[in-house]
Image (cartoon, rainbow over all chains, first blue to last red; front, side, top):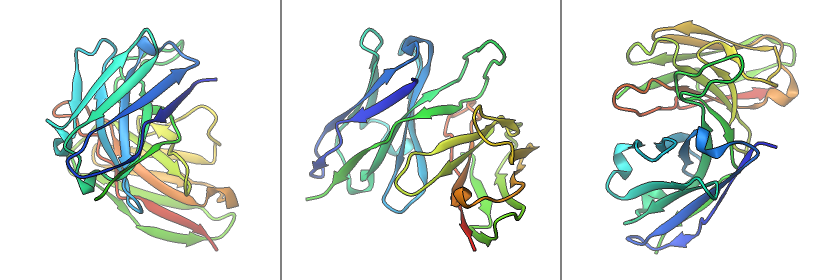
Length: 128
Length: 110
């Protein structure tokens, strides 16, 4: 079964750090871009960051640039989101998702970013 | 940055009704538009990508249309399990990437 599973969410004080992990299974991890999307309590969805297959391209929403860092371990099928200098506004459920950008199946090649497989999310709470 | 709007913000409809949700982009995004369904406490689910392509496993009562700045998600015959919040999202990745989601449309069953 194709799936991703997040972990690492916790309660952290403002200014603190946290590292989220996303474990992928059921697909060839190093063939895909990966992305993070977050959702603050009672709010809508916000794209956070994405990373390509060999880590040569990483993109971040402006609000996390310089504070969050994406990385991946293709040998272990793991995606990481290192979050530093956390703020109250970073409080959210963080979802990891597979991104189909540039992927070609037997019938389709994806040119845009399509987030097709999502994890259940991990909660990050930033509060004193 | 590309901004996304949706209308209505919420709607209430009966089982069997035809429902349409509108999504507008602040600039042309060609057909780089995806639709997601989210139920409370659950992860989003991809319904439609590239504006009109149905994701595998999604019921055919869902359809998408549009190009440029104006898009629509239609549920042809509403079912009880369609009660959820629906989000559009642009996937236009040049430049800079933002992949902004719309604010969502909550669909309730009367």
